[in-house]
Image 1 (tube, helix red, strand yellow):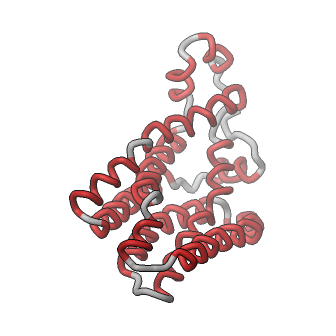
Image 2 (spheres, one colour):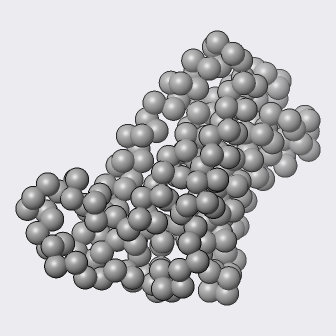
Image 3 (cartoon, rainbow, N blue to C red):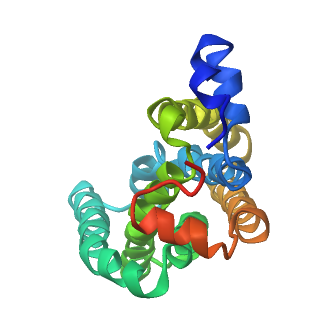
Length: 217
């Protein structure tokens, strides 16, 4: 463990904690910012898109959202067991892929069963969330773990807080389809950053994350 870590909070807490982030964690944060922009660009407008653009009735919209939540819930238990066999990072990668695919599937899906498939994809984006959280926690040194987790989510939240406003402006100026394709582009960028820079076959990190420990304690 880095001997300077106990003194981090007495110097410049935020900056020092970020500097103590594992390199993989910094890259994961960058990938997440792009992916959350993909999500937040459209999430407030999905209902409006279905009602006003696709002409779906309110009851069917409710059923589609219920399907999305059901799919998300059904992934947690089997995926939790499967990570013990194949590891965490394959499922984290799938999360980035499904985040990117939802706006594309919504843009190109035909009415009826096409929208059902799109919302199944939206539910599947949760497939790697527990694994991603475990990896984040494991990559933070124990003395700053609580502060580091809070700072990680804080930085991510600040970075994406403008996404819905930008999404509204894009819809107003360019239309709903352009917004969906823009979200898809952000999602693809996030997935690319993860697979190219944040996904590392480090067995020590993987094992520590699955045991909820830190490889840098």
